[in-house]
Image (tube, rainbow, N blue to C red; front, side, top):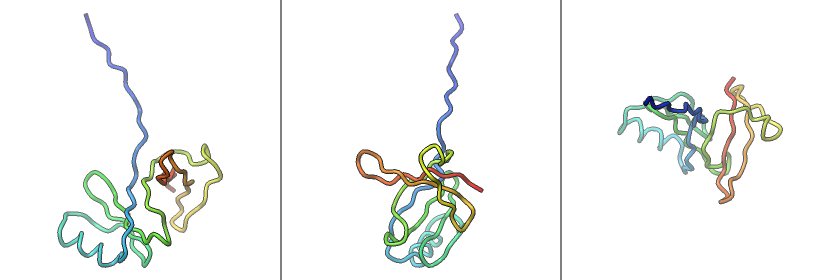
Length: 105
């Protein structure tokens, strides 16, 4: 008897955003201690790329801590276009966590 496995397509996590008090100091520490690279950095947030995930370091008064999933944000509301050309909608799960539904440019 042959066994057939159902192929499932899951959503992709694009990044996790962690609140920090000092973006530059946090980025410097991660670059010194781990193998990663900066893909974006300004005064209010930075994005580091690791082998299997990207991590954003954000100032909580500028960007909410969250995780971002790649999917069409228009399915969840009116997308906002960001300065890097990406579009997203922020949602809250039943526990109050911020979830960004993100479309890359």
